[in-house]
Length: 67
Image: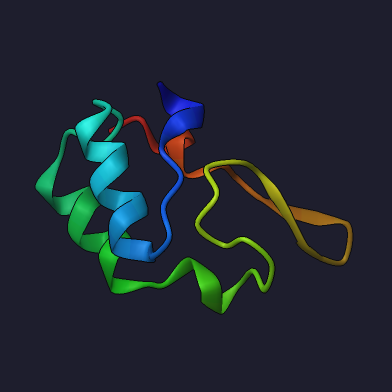
């Protein structure tokens, strides 16, 4: 289910991660909701997959949180 947690908004992504059993902590959900993934990724920021951010670096897929 991890790769099926995409959303159209940051909140939808987070809610899908919770619904799919990836996020199991209210503190993690709150932390993820406080920072919009679109601040770091310009294309498809709410896809649940790793993505390049710059300088040959990637941002992990949101489902990698597992908390």
